[in-house]
Structures are given as structure tokens and as C-alpha cells.
Length: 117
Image (cartoon, rainbow, N blue to C red; front, side):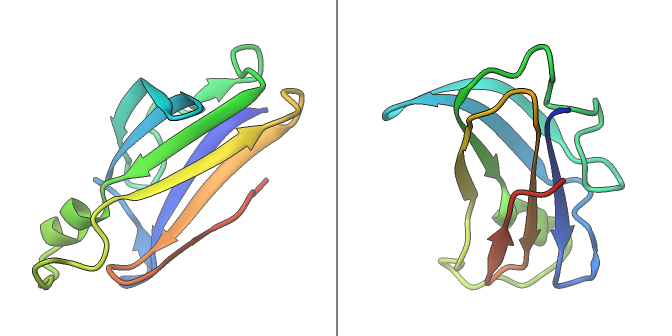
């Protein structure tokens, strides 16, 4: 239970190891940084859950993924300006007794997300 994320690089068919991610709490237009981390070899937060069940609160959150820097570090030639710089996902947590998993499937030109399990 709690909050987690996972990023898959759909261009290379692998976890997005090394991608930088930021987690924020949000309230209207105001965002407060909770933590920054770099994804491990499995494309996940190396510390595990972003929030465990006891710490997760009802409210709104934002995950920001540094897509441009990740693909540039992988040697992908990106146009200037590139199509995606960062991907920002705003989402809400309504029921803290449930698990909220926020995966990102990403390439330099597209992304998708969903509420996973």
C-alpha cells in the first residue's frame, strides 16, 4: 500500500534507469517539493515506496520526470527544441487505504500513464 512509480523506456524497451524524478504535493497552483530521486536499474525509486500507507495523505500530487536529460544521456539525438523536456503528472489520492501506483511509459516523442496496481 502507499504510493509508487515505475518508468519504462519504450524506445529502448527497458526500465528508465538513471532518470531523475521529483515528487511534489500540490494545492491549487502551489507545489511543494517532497523528494527528488534517480530511478534504479528497474526504473523504480531506489528507496521503495514514495509514501508508505501510514504516510500517504488524501490530496493532490505531482510527479515530474526529466525525459530530455534521460534520453540525451542514452545518446539519443534530440532536435532543438526537443519535443518533450519534462513530463509532469498531476494526480489525486482519494482513498489512502488503497495503493496508488503511477507508471510512466515514455519515449522522446510520446508518453502514457495509468493508475497501476
